Image (cartoon, rainbow, N blue to C red; front, side, top):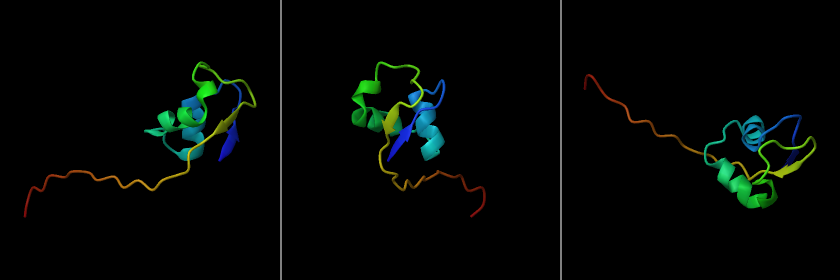
Length: 67
């Protein structure tokens, strides 16, 4: 999916806005957009190719107080 940067966007802000999280996605996005690695703040209208959304299951360990 291709999206475009808004004013004063950072790459992780673009990822978070469109994907809902940036955990693990920043590295994948940089692989798809190596030209963005040296830009701390993206110019307005910079095209960013985002990785495909993957269903992530989050397993939380829990402590049972009673059995």
